[in-house]
Image (cartoon, rainbow, N blue to C red; front, side, top):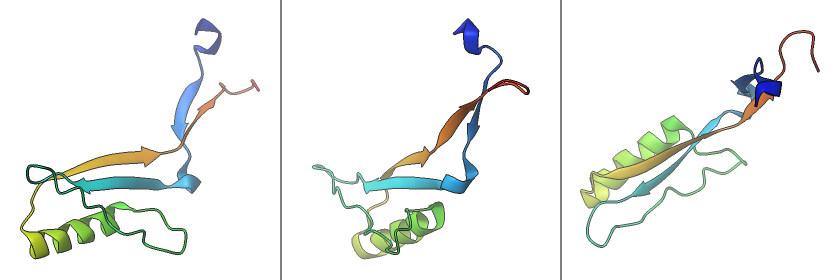
Length: 81
């Protein structure tokens, strides 16, 4: 890794951040996930929160598992390609 010592790992802002959400309440776990929002839009934090609030109001379930997904890229130090 010393060859890439000065490289930086940066988020690719144009790709955005999406979340994966699943209701994990109950035994066995509920397992419900939000429907895809459409228009090829990923599940973002606002959409996930609205869905979780809706699911809570309908089912009373309060426990959710979330995973944050983003895109990153290694970039060389200035002057290197």
